[in-house]
Length: 213
Image (cartoon, rainbow, N blue to C red; front, side, top):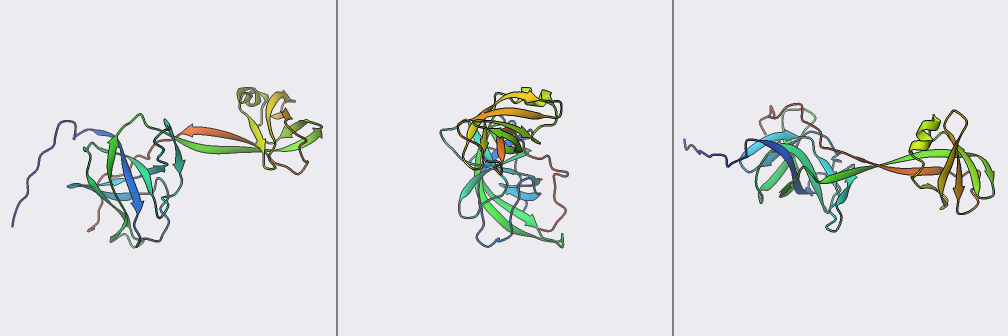
C-alpha cells in the first residue's frame, strides 16, 4: 500500500480566518444557510467549518453579509480554520439527514487569509407613528427607553413609503421619540432604522467529521 507523507509550512499549524471564493454546486438544490456545519476538503486537509457568506466588492472596505449561499454566482465564505496558502482548491460537503454520508454542496478555492476583513450584518429596527403633525411625527415601539433613543439619535430614519428623516428627541419614559421627515408621514406607514453589526464566522463544535465521506 503506498504511503504519502507531507509536511506543514511555517504558520500552517495555527488557526486564522480564511476566505474562499465559493459557488454552490449545480447538483445541490437544498438551501445552504450561513453558519451551518459543512465539511471542507482543502488540499490534503479535511475539517468541519461553519462559514458565513458575504458579498465581493473590490472597491469597498466593508462587505455585506449574505444569509444564504446563492446559486449561479460566487460569494466569499469566511471560516476559522488552520492556515493554508492560496491557491488551493476547495470542495465543501454537506452531511445528509441520515448523518452517515455527505454530498458535494459547493466548490471553490482559497482566496486569502485576512482576520481584518470586515463583514457587516444589516439589522432593521421598526416603529409606528403615534401622532403626525405636518413634517413631525411621534414614533413608538422602536425603542423602549429614552437612553436608547439618545444613543441612536445620529442615525437616519426612513419609512416604507419613501420618507426620510432624523430623530429629534425622546418623548416620555417608554422609548417613544419625536422625528422630523422630509414630507408628511402617513398614519399607516412604518418607520425604519438601518443598523449594521460586524459579524464573525461560527466556531465549529468539532474539527474533524465522524463520517466516511
